[in-house]
Image (cartoon, helix red, strand yellow):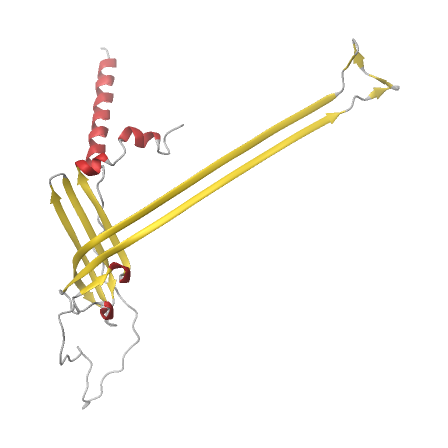
Length: 230
């Protein structure tokens, strides 16, 4: 029984699966998991005394606006993210060594053979290393996402999370944001910039033909990974 054709078919099937798997995950984004309820550390409060005018509980609102303040309310977050980073490094090392040992003499005469000194030695060594590296990256994200208040903390801060999924003719797009906002930072139009979101977790990505065209192929990823011997 000839096993070479079977091995060849098996290798071809494995390569095809890897290629298809690379096409599926190319450009895909992994959204963050849902935020767990925040458990703040608050100082103990004194129990209300009987007969007092004010008692512990939700605050009394004589007037209010349409800004988010309770669980289930909606809030619009304006994405104004912009980052830029540049890194460069240059390293140069060189070393030169030169050793010369004079020929010793025996009874005042050098040790020679056919007129050549046998014990006279010289050694030279040179080595150098030059390394350069440079990296530049910039990101910019603009838009808006409406999120939902999932928790109201005792100090008035709001835990929010939400996402926007767009299905276009060339693929799917996902924008997700989670974090904690301060009620005082919410504008009168019930919006807040993303720069004022604490513990912000923002995910943006897509899947489709456009995302795959910007992704490196599985063969290129192999030669740029730690598994490549070159």
